[in-house]
Length: 403
Ligand SMILES: C[S@@+](CC[C@H](N)C(=O)[O-])C[C@H]1O[C@@H](n2cnc3c(N)ncnc32)[C@H](O)[C@@H]1O
Image (cartoon, rainbow, N blue to C red):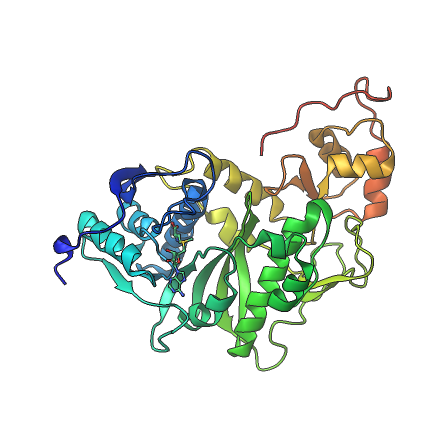
């Protein structure tokens, strides 16, 4: 097709994200949300997710010593694909597909603008699948749930390759739609401030189970909770003959041996108390990140999310050292312990470390922290913290570190 002859129906303008220019819908939303009503989707608030795709691709290409073959399988404008090609040396070619012909017209325009000939736009329904396709990196970034797309996307990921997955159906994964969660992801979520991490872990368990059906297993390289979405990059590997995705310890140091997937509480669970009656899950209980891979990630030179991506990676580099599920927030913990005011996070971390417990900030919450200390120790140590005027009832906590 003569790409230059394509005339898209959506009103477009040239815009910039990171170090790339591309055609985007002319009327972008003013707030942080996506352009829901536009037939061609672009959400500036997801720039962090694209910054991280660039970081992951660069690290993977460095590791393999060659450029990657990438499939951006729900590509919309192709912003992720274009940024991979324009802003990194990591990628040989990106196949960028979308099922909506109007969207593909924009993709075509952007392929012309990008100009390298290495962005291949196609109109393709991901659910249809092409069993012959294989890529080093496959990206699925849907509206809502990734569930219908996972079998095709996993099949298209090479042995040893990486699959990036977004889920934005947080009312299901982390909210009130618990029956749908059970049906869609096969597990029960958690109430309260830990619901988003539980949602991420439910998603990871589901990805693992789809992989197991294909005789493979998945290992998270980097997983996170965003504002209204969760996202993960998993490595797709051949499954061992027996055991699949279950079994194998996730614990480190003093932690108990934890199954990779299972209900919470599991035997020996000593993390934050959960508000739910009875067990939740089954969910992914093994680490959310591969420490070595996650620590190697570097922000793109011109991040679309500004300083956010560096800060995010800094927090992840800390929290990879904690291998047990779930984190604490100072507010809920202080309420549970009946403290007059929550001690500031730096003091809590210091007090836990003084007692020999590894403890770090988490990307997941500005007042959150992870620790290897079991809950009774956390309760004892945090209750014993004396700081400033905080013994006085109603005294205010010091300033929190930024997320
Ligand atoms: C959330 S948007 C993708 C955003 C894009 N990844 C980005 O970073 O800006 C989801 C896209 O998936 C496309 N889509 C929905 N169902 C599809 C399917 N079955 N196969 C392929 N594309 C599909 C939609 O047309 C839409 O453009």
